[in-house]
Length: 232
Image 1 (spheres, helix red, strand yellow):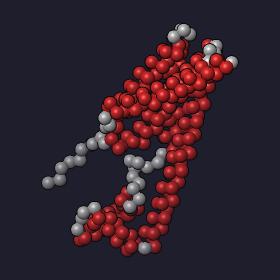
Image 2 (cartoon, rainbow, N blue to C red):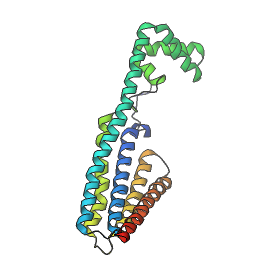
Image 3 (cartoon, one colour):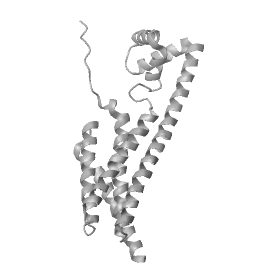
Image 4 (cartoon, rainbow, N blue to C red):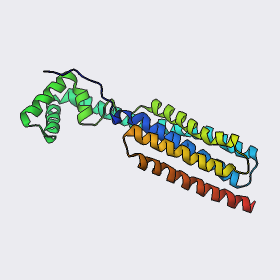
């Protein structure tokens, strides 16, 4: 009896947008908070701190978008080149490609006869998709999507960068550094926890990982800012 198909939500289906979104938000919080803390530690004026924070948000979002687009576009170019080569090999040497696919299934544990039968049926259905998935490791789930990655990175960076700026808007100059550091670490902890839960990873590890590196970044920039302020 053939059971009806049912939908399953696997963590790997989220890997494309999750990686870009988490990276963008994390960078937005860390870089903007660090920039604001560093400038504030140098005894700069409130106006200068705002200029630095907003400039960091805009520049960071554009940089994230451009970087993700270029990086993922390069991956997409490689995938297209591999698929074009595979398409040509299927057109010129179909027998060898059949044997190659059957060999992959044999190495995965099927006996020779069944491996050949599976390869024959899958190639009859969609030969290129079968080779893309099982020979090249390219599937709909993990295929490169440059524009999606760029927009996710820029948007999530902007959201992350906006959080320290909100704290900047509501904090007094006297407690500005402490407020931004504390709030940003809290934001990072929440982000790490959400990312870990969405990706099926251990919660504590995700939280510790992002808060540690965020604290280190803000600590270093605060030190640099205070040194430049002392020199000035």
